[in-house]
Image 1 (tube, rainbow, N blue to C red):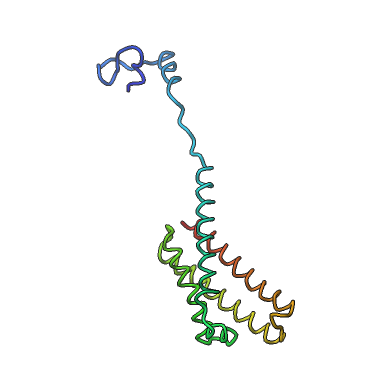
Image 2 (cartoon, rainbow, N blue to C red):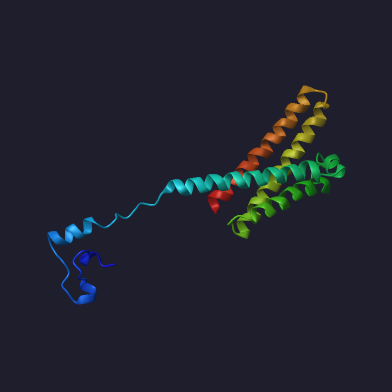
Length: 171
């Protein structure tokens, strides 16, 4: 398509004719579609979709690591600092996070760094929850037990949200 020769049957690039100048050239340019600015709404929409999908996968991961795969040995020993049971539990969370994040555009280094951050936060939150519960002598029959357990889960959920947000922003 030769925009300068549109409607005249001539194209300066093909026929050797001289390009139009002045008002005629301006008139030809008016018929060309204007260049469109990038639509950033699409990027935001894709980011929101990615955020939702990653967060959903992390929620499933959390369910598996905290309720399906967590052994009694892990539960019993999370309140003893540096005990292999608590370390294994947090390691399970981190390993499953790596598995989820490998399906994102993040590089392996970023994935491992995020998983390490989750390991540290998850380990210390579970340890602190167990220490506080043991000192309070609260049982599942007590209101304070559920408040402490709820705060523990709240911190874990904030961590998962931070991981999902980091995955979208760093991708």
